[in-house]
Structures are given as structure tokens and as C-alpha cells.
Length: 414
Image 1: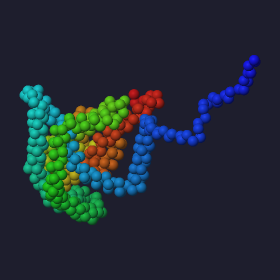
Image 2: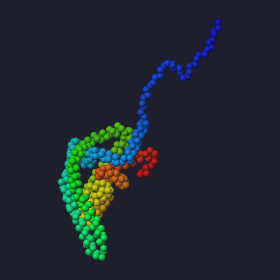
Image 3: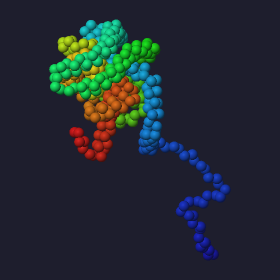
Image 4: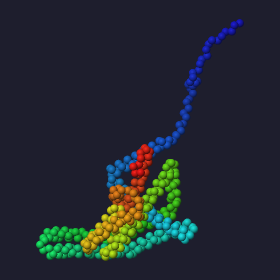
């Protein structure tokens, strides 16, 4: 028998695999969120740009509201800011006492060295304040009272000056000039007398305000003490924040930036305080050598206002020139020349020796920062605006140099 061959072809399955059954349900697999550093960075940049844009629009649209809000925030934070300022100013003194106790007197306990150093530093500050309140302040009040009492003599001195001028030069007609002075001088003297007479009540009101604000002062002192005691704990906390939130490749740079900003701020405050103290003492010595009156009052004004760069010498010289002008024009001229020489000595020699290149910003930017800081925080704002602007300038220069290096553009400063 012959076998019959089955020539019927088998169905070929498609290459794509078996066809799924119609009634088989499809499974929805959950999608896992995969973090992306690039998108996170972009989101941060967008958030920063939007925030800065909103702040700029807010400042442009409502500048007075922003200024008032900043003043309110500064008013609330003032005790803590003053405490931080006290701690920064006393920190070099405490470090010096600590080294003396540890190296010279061989005190082995770090806690004892720290406690004694803090106590001695605050005793020095309290002693200086006691000397100012008990000795300097009464003499300043006496000097202001004498200035107020001597104001009526200014009119008589001016009148005698023109009479003597007419008698010495009989052919010269000074009647018109004398009439103009006679018309202007009474009102000018009344204004000066009113300003000078208001200085004593203002000083008294300032003393009352200081007493009523004793709580803020106590808070500031307590804050400064805790900052000095817990300095290393605060530094460790800052390092934890940096290591926790800053990308790993920028940690060292961030720590270096914080250290440099701290040096800029601290060196400026301590250096400017020492510089102003020396200028005030030199002014007091020179005024006593040349036998100028009100030397203590004027020297205190010159020393305090010298804390403000550029504007400080002019602000401190004007009251002294006006006070001495009422006594003797020649003494006022001599005081003006003395202040010019003293400020040139400070600007060319003493200031660079003490401060060095701490600020490192141009005079134009210093003037702008003082103007803005004075409008926001008054005298304290004028003083603190310079080191704050110096830190911002340092950060901006770092950012610019970083961007230039990323684009392979050589730095023009180097």
C-alpha cells in the first residue's frame, strides 16, 4: 500500500508572538518616581528667579511699605543684632585673654579659661560704660549748657566787629552789609539757641529711653554671652546645615565663603572701633595742647562719628566748627585745619594700618551703601551697611569669577 502524503501546510505563527485572548484583562503597573538632579536644579533656579522678581516688583511698586516693613523687622530683631555685634566685638578680646591664661598662667582647664575670659571682657566693658556715665556724660552736659548760655554773646560780638571795622576804615561803607547782618543774625541766633537748648532735653530723653529700653539691652547682653559660650556649638550647627543641604562638591567652597565673610565683618567692626578711639583721643590731646574749649564734648563727637566711613569726619567736624565759631573765629579756623590734618592722617596712615584691605570696595559704592543703610537703619545702618556691602561685593565677585571660568574667559583682575 502506498502511503498518502499530507501536503496541508501548518499555520505559521506570527513573529510578534501569540495573540492575547480577548477577555484577558491588562495589568496597570505603578509608575515609580525617579528623582532627577537636573530638574531639581532647574526648579530651584525658577523658584529663586520668581522670588527675586516678586521682591523687585514689590520694592518698585510700594517702596515706602517695604521700607516700613524692614524697619519693623529691624526693630524686633535689634536686641539680637546688638547681641551679635557685642559678641563679635568682644570675641578678639576674649581670645587674647584665653591665650594669656592658657599659655602664660598655664591654666589647663578650657572651661575655666573661657569663663574667666568672658567675665574679664564684660567687666572691662561695664567699667568703660561706668566711666562714660559718671565722668564724661556730666562734662558733656556742662559743655552743652555753656554753649547755650554763650549764644547771646554772638550777636554782641558781631555788632562790635562791624563797629570796629567802620572805625578802622572810615572811608569804607559797610552800612549795607551791617544792615543785612542785623536783619539775618537775630533769626539765626534764635534758631541756634532753639537747637542748642533742645539738646539738653534731647539728651535727657535719650537717657530715659535708654532706661526704658533696659530690657532690650539685657536681652542683647544675654544673647552675646550665650553666643560666646556656645560658639563652637553654633559653628557645629552651621556646619551640619551646610553638610546637609549644600551639594557635596560645593561644601568646601561654602565653608571658605562663610569664614571669609566672618573675617570681613569682624575685622571691620573691631578695626574701625580701635581707629575711632585713637582719633578721638588724638583730637582731645590736640585740642588741649592748642587750648581749645569744649575739648571733651567735641572729641567724643569726632570719635563716635568717625565710625562712619567718609561721611563721619564731616559730620563730626561741623558741630565743633559751629561751637568754636561762637567763641573765636580763629579757634574755629584752627580746629578746622586740625581736623583736616587729623583725618588725612587717619585716611592715609592710621586707617590702612589698622583696617588694611578689609573693605576692599570703591568709595562710590561705600557712599551708596551708607546712604541706603542710613535711610533704613539710621546711624547704626550707616555703620553696618559698609561691612554688609563688603560681604555682598565679595560674594558677587566670586559668582562673576565662577561664571567667567565656566565660559573660559580670563579674569581681567588677575
